[in-house]
Length: 88
Image 1 (spheres, one colour):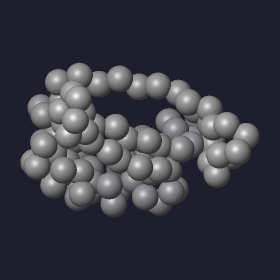
Image 2 (image 1 turned 45 degrees about the vertical axis):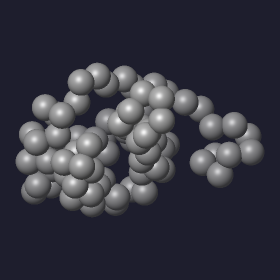
Image 3 (image 1 turned 180 degrees about the horizontal axis):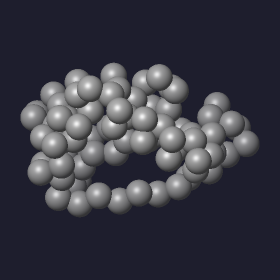
């Protein structure tokens, strides 16, 4: 978890141009060291463009290279903010 966290701290700078990072959390109770990241995008097209542009930035590929072996399971979900959410 420490190694992943250190890599994540370096990598996040490559993904902050569009302010899509909402939060990153990990658990220490229940299933230990489960990581959750929340990203906000205007649309699926915006998500695709943002994710693809990260690969053009020097250092993103290195961080992915070192963090992928630390991942045992990955899931992706689409969530729609409620009417009262500041993400509207």
